[in-house]
Image 1 (cartoon, helix red, strand yellow):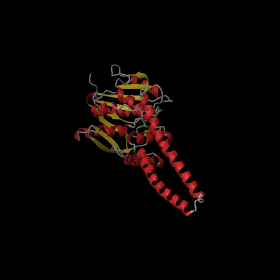
Image 2 (cartoon, rainbow, N blue to C red):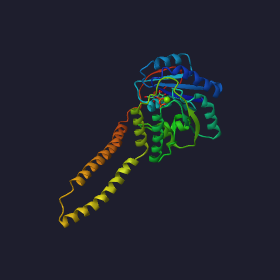
Image 3 (cartoon, rainbow, N blue to C red):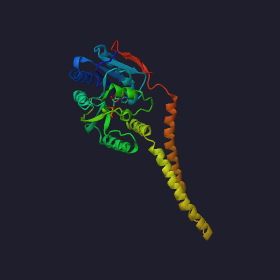
Image 4 (spheres, rainbow, N blue to C red):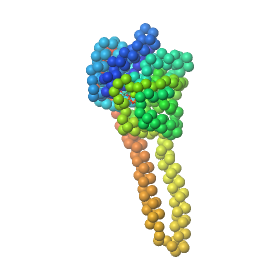
Length: 321
Ligand code: UDP
Ligand code: MG
């Protein structure tokens, strides 16, 4: 059985206030862009604590093209998105946020870009970001630039998960089993022809960001450790430099001993102890970050657990694990 021409996959966490408008605008965009209404919507409820799930059930009851998936708890944005991607069956796949910061009306142009440039991935690059705090914009900008320096994979700057993908690109993405998922980087890793698409990010339709600083930091750590071992390499380079310095220090100490003025310099000794102690703790912590992720990966747990599914009778409904 082949799927519809297009799947639109949307992870949602506490987005009750956005859902009806989201459904309306996404449906309109899909109807305009896809011939014969041959599309499906996949909404994933990522353990919302508000009324998102009942709203989704209601929308699904009135729309045969909507598949709503309820995860057993909050698994996080990237895993909720993975759940939706696992369950969708379209030939082309649009990933979009629930808060309408990424305008669904761009779908037509993105499809056209995919067609005309024979691309497997059309990723939306944020030219401007309305309604976001200076802090969010500054940290995001810094993060993408730091990441670009650290990684071997070319992850596009200022690009979120808002993108259009071909089925073969999605299948390649879904063949990657890791738990710590930084999807925009994983998509860059799979290769194929990927082209940018410039757009202006809007304000949220309703509610507030579901990415507090703690989630942003966790996300950044996953991105860096998932795509780069540079911090580990720095640690060993730094260690090597210290070995060279300590060799000079040994010469100096031996010279002092020979010259008969060995006991002095509490200050310099304390400095060395304190600085080396701090550096060692930092480097050990860094190694610990990688080790912790290694541990989590070796457990090979399912990426998410589906509790309920609503709507789209007859669709592909394997549960992804
Ligand atoms: N989201 C999710 N699970 C989470 C956090 C966020 O599914 O634990 C969804 C959220 O509903 C939205 C998307 O991920 O559709 C992006 O989140 P948000 O808009 O809050 O992030 P921001 O745009 O502020 O970076
Ligand atoms: Mg948002």
